[in-house]
Length: 190
Image 1: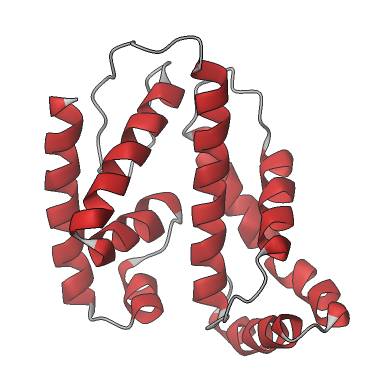
Image 2 (image 1 turned 180 degrees about the vertical axis):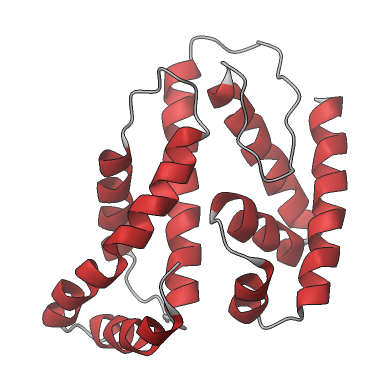
């Protein structure tokens, strides 16, 4: 993530952009570009080895979608990167679904949630299964789903997640443990 001293500048630029200041967007891009690339790189590395969507393309597509989000009440840099992580996840899921549309019915493989990359050659199917399980979990525990998204997909630390969600680090840890158990059970059943 960005150094803490960049947070006020990013927050100010996000708010200026929110009210229609195009110059603020131009100033924001260099401040967030490296972090967006790191997020995208984490996502792409979790994909199968012959995945054709590259880091730069994922960053560009995510940024196009973020710019298209009108009326977002930006709460700060953590909110921006949380939404960025969510957008990137949705892009990859859409991409995986598109590529797998003719290959439905395959079995899903076991996925671990210990913070290590998934190593299966069938990562796209796993990403779809994880996305679907996370969507089901979100209907039961929205905050817990947000913790998973920010930690696993967004690469945020527990303190960053706690600040972004306005909860304690202990609550983040508890939500993470519950989410891992719930998602593991769902993915095994699927």
